[in-house]
Length: 450
Image (cartoon, rainbow, N blue to C red):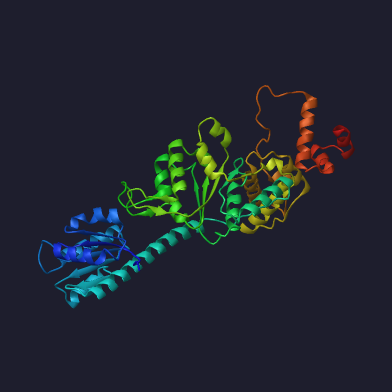
């Protein structure tokens, strides 16, 4: 029966016989073992192996029995990795030395000559402790990420949003990669969080990274992580976003902004389902559900050679396009009322409703900033409101006219037709509401429609 190997061990001892004996004993039992005579090699082997346990002799060239060199190298190891599991060993043991070793941060203490069964028990207890510490470090990073996230709020009764919600409900329970398309501020991140919340990975990490805000030179370290000393400011090892998200959901926002060379690196990691931290040769398998989003016309980007077609195929098993707010009709009011209640509670205000003029103003605005613009407009209005309801004057909105080319028509008949089409769209086909938006009677609108 094959023995399951577990743990990586680094042994540092200036006695070649000791190194030979330990290598012979441990090699059949552990994943990997490295031995070195000179403690000056600790850093090199530590970066190469990422050991679970360091088995460190206490006496080298300086003297035979004091153990001072061992304490100095113990301090060196713990300085580079405060959670390292270091087991000291010496032929010159005494109670005081053992107590000092444990107080100095050593996990355990072994005397030479050793008993094989006791040595193995001590080492594998150290391996288990090291692996538990690694899990805890990863969990802490995941909790930091989770603390920055909020529960998703998906609001909308318009037909276009009902179709989006239906797609989300169908796709969420699967592990299919999803590409979310839409203008800035439409709520692509909310859709991503809803997909996660409805999935079987809901209790696992949701890790988000805005690729548009990450400098190109930091992309690899953010996504893949790095080892201590991999570059000048790498004072300690750090797991990347992909490693932190493993088991859960990874959301890559603004993926359309990713430069071509970095697209290739991302594609390779997704296809192999494994990553290597910068400064490491060790490969770490990853298991993530991938969600991506962009406001770019990604298919045009592919056609013009700015985005890899093979990467697009990898990330868009399902595409979800979020409509701009100006095409969602009465959803504008639903969202405004939701934000009003949220901010009235947050700022302890007595504002309870939108009056009729405020509703009409919000419906007439084209919302170039979409839901994000509406959210900030309502927050500002609630903060400055003097009564229990918001009126049109409480909203400070930028000119909502759409920028057009110099060749835009000035034909009055065409402009009227566009205004009617837009009003009907906002009103969801309701003639009475559309007439109110246009400032004309319902019968006048019927005549114009005919």
